[in-house]
Length: 321
Image (cartoon, rainbow, N blue to C red; front, side, top):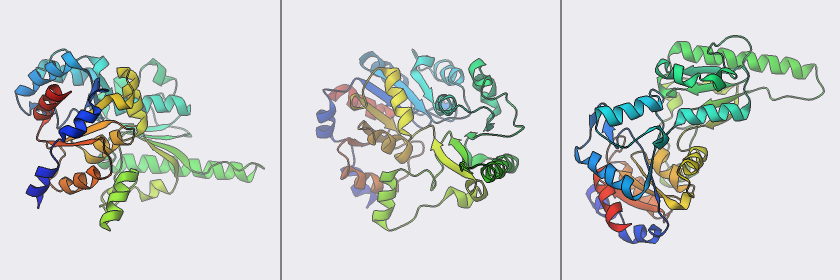
């Protein structure tokens, strides 16, 4: 069955041809596409990236929470040999966390983040919103790290901050004629499966009449969600990060194609804004995803199909765009 789907879901040249006149930008995930852990997936990929950059504006869009943009560039250029990549080519979920914190005008959020990005995160502008300490009365929660990897201490810190906010807001509303929201605004840098689900993926699981495993079952955040409101994802698949990527690349969503290994974060995230999308069978890709992609091909003409790796996808883009 999977082998049969493999044939049906390869890149459709007719779909690619329909997008061709507009495409001037390639968005690309990093981990699982350009490298696996600390190694190249294939030596030829560095050459294919150089060719792509000669023809298109290439922007790397990633949900990583453990590397700064500088560290990403250093790894790609110095360690792996991807030349001509600089920080202007990289957009991370952490960029979007900082942007959303400014927009929401937090003054003392409770923030958890990977220590490896703390110095970069706490630039002069951020220090006006958060002093790097989690003390006092918090007005927001920011989970700027992988929510699946939170320690017990971090979860307890977040829950206590949320409870205190709820209690304070309830007390204030009891003494005021105007009721205020009792739950604390919450930002996630990356999606939490089963909580921050995109509409297309909900439709697929409804279509299959089955439920996807919930991250909450693996990492007990139920208590936190009892006290949170306005939960927002800052990284992929949020439309905001794609719009920011388009701004960075000076293009419209319809002028871009995304190459990624994650069905929801990369592919659905791009499709929901009208971008082209190609799924790559590496990194987070799983053979079970073939069925989802086959179903998605019937739903959205902007899904071009699947290729085995970044090099194969890049070669077809160079030959047919």
